[in-house]
Length: 286
Image (cartoon, rainbow, N blue to C red; front, side, top):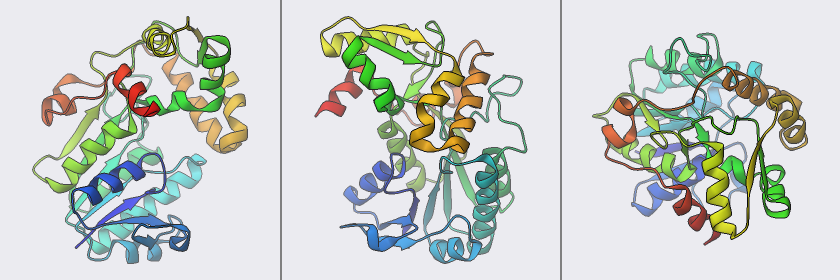
């Protein structure tokens, strides 16, 4: 019985796979081309094919799922396919990451609608009756390492990001998410949503101050329009994926904060604390 990790060569799945392997757990990278994976156990998986997903999940102890950055229409089809494969194979445990898409704040401009890909995935996996936990980060600190963001921080002392300077966010690292996912995959006592991130949230001004301390130079935060950010990242992710990111930040412009609920946070539910900004910056430079 093994743990199947979606996107295990990427930013979210990679740390999860590494933690499980270090803990001596049988875990495999679920990727489209296993031959391209070096020095890691891997299984072929294609989100666009239910049979491929079913074969990858067969006999699994647990499955970690997060939808890739893609056009929403593609993500929605992947959600349907994944849920069908879960229904066929019934793994003992499933953990889904929302990847920052908000599903636990009804009435907020940030709440994803029921027909969205992430809401559909959670709902349809719930309907299979398997043991399910949902990891709900908000924004990833690793977004700040994107060259279009980090480059100007270093060269100009300006942190440009599509948020207001005073907008509180429960930022977290992929490493924080991996710690929570590992716990939830191996302990099925916890079900439902577990928020991951700083609580209370931290602002753009806080981010700039942390970078200034780390770089030993002045850094200021400049909020930019989501559309401008979309133009910056489109060459990296493609127009379809960038459009989804832009829509997410447009919603944040209408909200007062993007913060997890303390009562369902990993701090409260699991006793796991996220990294501070300074801890994260130090780890990234190690």
